[in-house]
Image (cartoon, rainbow, N blue to C red; front, side, top):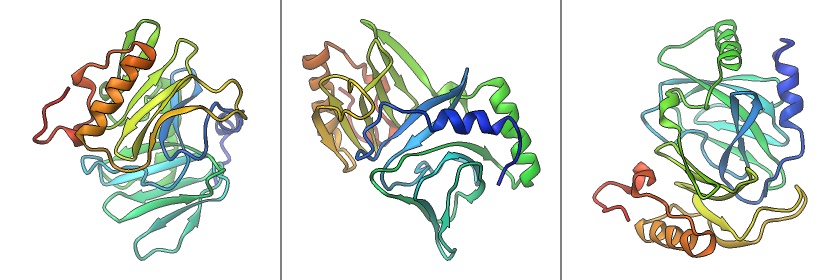
Amino acid sequence: MVSADWVQPLIERAHAPQFWDAATPFVDPIELAPGYNGLRLAGNLRPHTDLAFPKWCYLLVFRGGQTYMTMHRKQNIRLRAGMLFELDEHRRHSVIQRPSDMMVWTPLDSDRRLSLDEALERHRQLRDSGTFVLADKSKLKSIDHKGFRIAYDTRIVWIHDPSGACIARFGRGGYALCAAAAATPDTPPSYLLLTHRTPRPAGWARWVEALQKTHGIRVPARVMPNFLRAGEKAI
């Protein structure tokens, strides 16, 4: 467990009420400090599914609940707030948690194995310099469209309304589209589209068309996640 003073305010921020439907297994970014983002997760899926990620990852956990990391031939480990967890990306792994729980963490990717002290110091540097969670910040891009924000990073697409609430997501873990953002953290959103299966190109076309009809948002072809691009023509 990490005892550094700079970590505690981030833990408190991660436990603040969030506009989030915990029954939906999507990864979504959350700003824990100005310019410093973590990831929040509900449901069961792998933290990284892209083989391009480096071999080693150091998860600094700010919120855990009943969340467990499973790794091939390793004992399950409960992820608690303030824990710095070393993850071998080449070992099969997944996160298991209750549907009502939310996990918040920031990953630190590395091409070599780090000591825990070095990993913690690099996490502190990320907090001070700002991060968009990804090892390559240039992968996270955004487009402003009629007051809405389209954010994408080659793996996932998020649509935020003018208030900043996330009203749609599309990624390997499925996709969702809300009629509007939830009024309060305790109010579940009204879904127009929701699936937890890996989408096919037809699902992308359906999602794009529904965004156009419902919110007047035109999603450019260039934001399509890479896992859909092989052998398929973007819409």
